Image 1 (cartoon, rainbow over the protein chains, first blue to last red):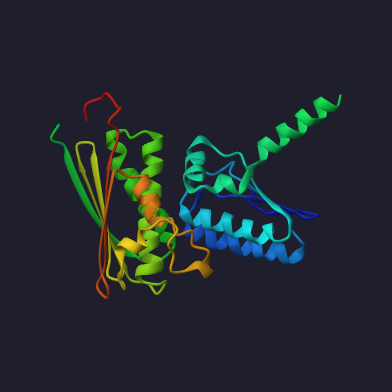
Image 2 (spheres, each protein chain N blue to C red; image 1 turned 90 degrees about the vertical axis):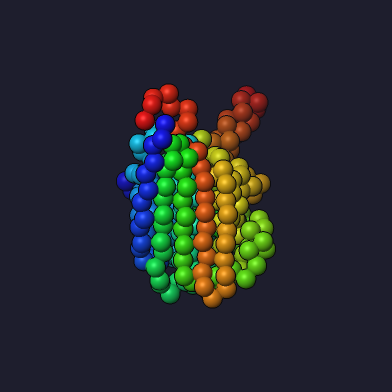
Length: 116
Length: 147
């Protein structure tokens, strides 16, 4: 599994581990901090592809990044969220501040269709 | 079905043991064939309670966490105890989004998660003595087989 963070211009892509607890969050937060010193990041995508568990410390991590990016006009996305993870994200109210990445892709496709 | 089982484990209050606690509980309940959702729920709840003991009970300085797990038929009871600093106002601590550590990006949702992902939650605490969190969850009830 490739768990390296990817930086592309002002986008940061973050593959999340299988289980996100307080212990894991501390390590991910440190990695994000390092990447955000390398470049002026405006957009973050949290990729849940390999994730099957997240507790409230993960919510703290995502909400914290949202606060950081919101002041610079950026945005936070979540990608590949399983039904199990959806339950946690919905319950926490996180969907009020983050956008499912797949929704963005669909919206863009619809927009292109409308133009044609 | 008078099937009961019980276990008691003690471990150091360090971050690595959050996953250990989840694995122990998952293994213990496997016998009653819980659904993936039930298993996910209880793992999250255990994670929250253990994290609470590590961060708030012992404030990251280490100590011992005791976890008692009991299964009575499909009724799972988990009691997580620390001998840390305790919670002065349990009611306040259990309010959604309440956090004593905003600078550490805590979501303040730990107890809300425990409450939402179990059937019963009880928190007892004495400042200076420690905290005991009791969680009850029904597991594997949909499973038709007789254990």
